[in-house]
Image (cartoon, rainbow, N blue to C red):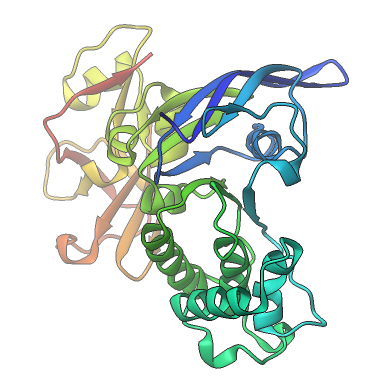
Length: 332
């Protein structure tokens, strides 16, 4: 039995459809991400799962129980917010223990469970400190500990890393994944960050304009997108129509199809008589070069690791395009 079943969920605000017949099943212990651009409906879906919004149509089942009309406090669902939502007047241990006190657990049980969870999130040494004295990453771990300690059936993450800088986001992301694996609590993670979803998830659902575009394992979605939106949003792929596919790569596709080529699968080369495009931009990212190449007014992106770029390129260079894969992917 799935821990969470979302059946035909639709939601309208003032007659405007925000979600349109969403169907998902999330298994026990799974880390499931819902990813999509701003305004696609992912936060609304999370709020419906939590009981903070009610659907216009459809049902929500948690642990096999129809929870559609249940208030939030009856659902045994924990939420990790983007803004931490900690109590500034309490220290770390008091924040983590808050949910257990609400449940009227004994002092002995509260101390035992709180101490155990603080040890898991590597914050035992900060137990007596005010949360305001902690870094952003530490505050996010306190927020997660406060949820885990109550042993919910489900944890919902509402873009929890978006307020952190890059290095802290990487560090906290790794910690979050470790803690979720150790706790085994089924988790639903909402984000607009594709790299977060790919790195953390067992499975992903890609949402756009209130509809599920594709769901599956990260590798499946990245390498085999279901349509042009998924290919552009998840892997930032290049899309070529039938004319360019034939001209650049001698690959024939139907007129209603697009050839999908990942940025890492296409490489600019100078040592060729065939000059197909012009480099209009070169960005150095620390681990790779990102090339922007114009071909007959079409923009093509290439990303190459530093150790594979053996030629010196400059903006304005005329280049050929080398295809680094023999796999042909097409989308409608």
